[in-house]
Amino acid sequence: MSTDLDLAVDLLRATPTHENRSDGQLRAWAAIALAYGDELAAGTDSAANEDVQVVEREGGIRRDEILVAEHHGDTVTVYTDSLTRLEKLAAENGFQVSREALRTAAIAHELAHRRLDVRELNRRLGHTALRLGPFRMRGHVAGAEEIAAHRFAHHRSGLGVSPLLLTAALAGGN
Ligand SMILES: [Zn+2]
Image 1 (cartoon, helix red, strand yellow):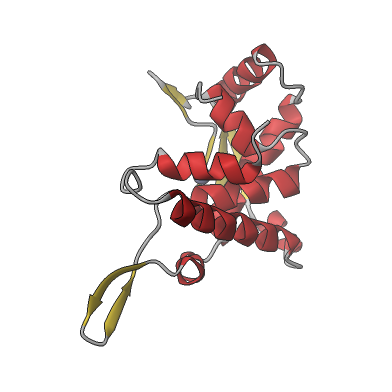
Image 2: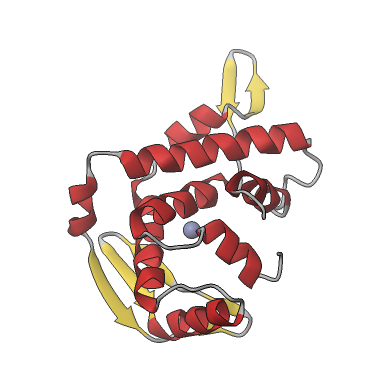
């Protein structure tokens, strides 16, 4: 079975702008993003979980896209139709995960996005996109935030399966 590191490398490789990067580079970035997710989840500011409002509504499924949750400011929206679809797909793929655990993971994923410090993550990734005289432009590593958010969600939700594995499997990847 693939490890989270393998899955995170796959996720980066499938992300536009990374097609021609070396495996070593992607592996290094994936490890940094996972570690950042671990660190965020281990943070002592868990009380911050409570400062968001969770609302539920339908309307997450559009053609071939399933949006399970999203956040705007202090509100996390969980799309119940997407959650139902996710629950069904997970069961069909042999994953024993409850709807409640999937819901918790989806909310935690959004909390991670809300909490993660993109500048700090970029600093750790150390990707220099451009150097202009003394100026060094810190590049954005597409996909790194997703990896950190998936990892954070795994820690915070108690989901029995890695969200990275679940995502890859449901996307038809594994
Ligand atoms: Zn995300």
